[in-house]
Image 1 (cartoon, one colour):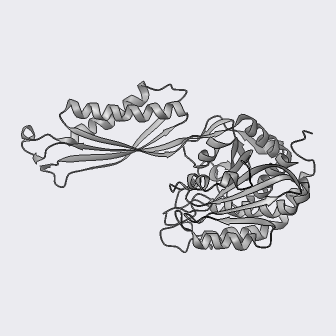
Image 2 (cartoon, one colour):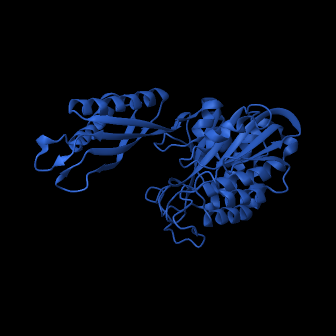
Image 3 (cartoon, one colour):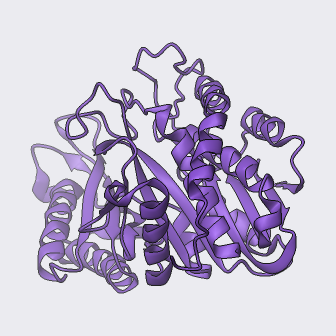
Length: 404
């Protein structure tokens, strides 16, 4: 057996199973009271209470409700980071679960409550094994993953150096309410999640009466042409094996059917799977819409709002994560992803700074079909918290294997 994973992993799963009822209770308490964004006081209080009594060096974020906890091993060595996101989504829950959200308009629709409980479980498992650790584990509980930029703020606040030196690697997992059966783990080397950016466009013309478009400069057809041209650009300027996705989700213009407005506006999400494609698609999108506006005598304001980078798994760390899954959970529990997901994740920010591995964990309920179940971000998304023990054990095993 390779030296990077110590043999007694069965004991890790056994101990994690013993923690399972406690982790389920924590997860369901978090699920009942989701909080959104960077300021999560109740969530942070629950995390701190769950960590109370463990031999951890705890630092609290000031700009966001983060918790950074350092566990020192018995012997010196490198540091690794385990991350969980804490925040919910602005979604009104429609699951009918007995522990459904009690916060109007907010829901843990992406499973971050499971991530938080799993990392608490990993903290307990690792604290009980301090004598086996040669180095330190940084436990990062991060708010603001769902658009808040929490990872970047935590990096600025020094989470990667919380143990006194730069962490050698970072690991995280994400549960899925569909696509994977419960308990299966999927991963891949290289890009695993897309970059996500926003394009906002305002086409400015000259308003007038709808009966006399020749006396106005109508921005509506110009904006429509720009939307269609962006779709053509995606199919003609990009390699089919390094694709991009550009979806216009908002379009606003006018106040009455017989009035030509002064301006029309639209917004788009832009997904890409490599830094090169990301740079090109954003530059080309701005060039295309401005060129169309100029051709029709309209001014175009096009602004790119940078989002999250591509989440890239370091090949060596991805291979290590695969070996760990197979040894801990069983050979058949790991699934190689044929392609990355078009969703985005700000764990990619950490992966830009240190070698990282990120895996997906199936959490589809047993009474649902993974191929038809409501997926993450849905008001009807349900997650099987029966995976919490194995998720906690996996996070702990990743750290243990690196620090033995």
